[in-house]
Image (cartoon, rainbow, N blue to C red; front, top):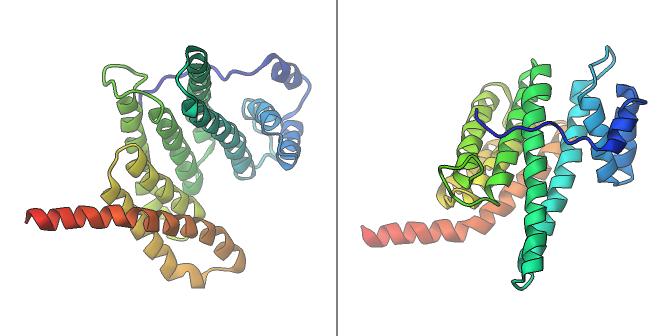
Length: 263
């Protein structure tokens, strides 16, 4: 699966801390930073512990959400900043600032793709963990695709990342359909994000709607069989699927009407 890779950009501060912290200490401080909503600090500590050897008491499943939250919140912040920068009237200084944000998005996205492929995926033998991290790779290819031009010949192009995202989402879906229940939050999140990718990047509203509708219907049938905690975890994603379906329905209906008009 070709994609650009780069060493994780550990800052001088985090390198200094890495020499002093054990993996358990870095995990603890990442949790504290999360609770304090200091996501820059959380990412520093996350970068430390993912590159330290696993210990006998390490919980790769417990650390999985920490890793995702640390990277996701920093990426979300950059993506919001880029959207705001694009709203500013054209100006050479504003455009230069926007380019700087885009480069930060590229660096962070390439870092995630690298660390997942080389460090995180090899730690997993269970199917849920594999689906989680393959989905994460697909998501970050999606983030990179949304800010790049569709130039097929360049490794830094929308089409290159879109192709990689499609391959990874498909692989994750194949694994999830075999091993995870329709109400599993990892499977639901995968289908939610894949449908968003189909809508936003591939501009395929019909496929996006079908994907989301199938996930929604299958989960809805089994929600009542879940424990209270399982219900809470699943229903959050089910509601997001429902919201997208309601948003996309008018476009799907318009496509159907256009097809009927041609016939």
